[in-house]
Structure formats: C-alpha cells, structure tokens
Image (cartoon, rainbow, N blue to C red; front, top):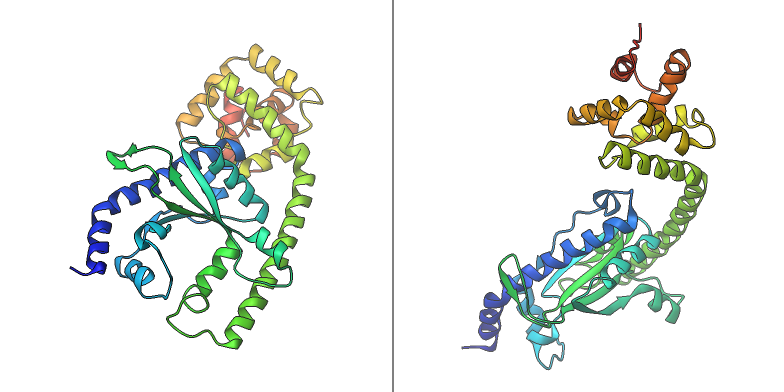
Length: 328
C-alpha cells in the first residue's frame, strides 16, 4: 500500500471527527459572539454564513505529497484539514470575533497568520490580509455523538468582506500552482489589496461618524429595551421600525423617559397585555422597544400622536384601539 493510500485511509477514518470539530467551533464562537455585539444580530454581523468544511481528499493528498513542501509528518503537519471562517464588514469587527474565540475555555489557539503584524514588518507590501488561527481541543471531547481527539487542529479564518472577496478572486490564480502567476497578475493583485485597505479605512471612518451620530439614539433604545424586557417579559427585536418610531416619539416622554414610561405602564397594566397579544400575532411593530413611546404619545394626545405616526393609518389602528381610540 502506498503512502498516499495510507494517508487517505487514515483521513477517511478521522474525517468525521474533524468535521464535528469544525461545527463545534463554528457554533461556540457564534454563541459567544452574540452578547458581545448585542443588539446586533449575529446573522447580520457575520456577512457570510458560517459553514465549516473539510478539505477535499485529492487536494489534501496534493498538498501533502506534491507541492515540494518538506513536511516531517504530512498528516500531523497539515493543520487546515478542516476549516471555518468568520466574515465581517470592518477590520475593527475582526477583533470582536477574536475576542469571542479566545474567551472560550477548553481549547488552545495559536495565530497562524496575522495581517497586521505582517504589515508592520513590511509596510510597503500589499498582500492577502486576514487573521488565521489554528484551534485544538485541550482534551478528548464529544460533539453531536462524535468523539473528537485531543489536539485535533482546525483552521479558523477571520476576515472582512473585502478581504474575503479578494481571497476568492485570487485563491486559484495567485497563491496556487495550477497556473503560473504572471507579473501583471501579481501587480494587479497588489493594487487591488492596496485599494481594499484604503476602502476599509474609509469604511471605518464612516462607521465612526455614524456611531457618534447615533450614540444618543442607541442609548435610548437600550433604555427602552430594558423597560420592555422587564415589563413586557419578552426580548425586544428592534429593526428599522425602531428607528422610525424613535424618530417620531423620542421627545414625548421628556428627559426622564425611563421613569415616565414605567409609571405609565404601572398605571395602565393592560398596555403590557395588549403588546404581548400583538407580539403573539407576529406584528413586528409591537416588538420594537419604542412602541412604548408610541403608546404614551397616544395616551397624552391622540391628535399629536397620529400626526407624526411614521407608518400607515391602518398600521396604527391596533395601537389606537388598545387605548380606546381610532384613526377616524
């Protein structure tokens, strides 16, 4: 039996454990990331679905035996037999995923590639940029009924959407030996990466400006979410509707909006019951924290509340009816 056959036989027997390890890491990191980025949803924060993949059998054999690499032990030395990736929008978002990855007990991680360190060492070069880790379990573990041996490696890539697009474009043309990379290919790839870095810098500046402009709005949504959670008993689900309602009614409860709304709900407990009923009917308006402001606005003045309502009259009708009012 050839060394390639021995290699593939071992891979066939261990592949399920590697695939389970990739799924475990993907699931655990997303769970750990969720509270770090709240109220942003993980599915929105990660711009590409997380889908761990085991290396194709033939590509694995090719990498192990046919690329002029001096592996002492090809099977053990190749650490990307399974991999998973987390794709975010901004370079600063990468650090949030790193934080989640590093905070989970039970595994050891080592940085396989860090583009920031590479840029520091060679600031004039523009090349593929991403953060790569190799993650290994500290002990034998079980996931989904599959035993994962201690020290099983998984490559974890964390990159921006721009970096991901670049790597998809150049994966088989610049860094792989299937075709010879010409001078023009390499030059254009370097120019593309320089442009991507500049674009990310501008994205970061825009994000900083937007965050500063929305700081007070986000604080108010956070305050309203706490009231909603405590009084309604459900987890709020702010969407674009939240911004529309908040823009219309953000001043109605005054500076002490927290105290005012708590008192309003305590004096009118049926409001909480009605919101729960609307949520059960899957009406997204009533999952917005700022719906509390809308109720209070109607309570104070139906005319003023309806004059600034940002949606259609029909969509306001259930809220008005709860307080004994009507659009007509």
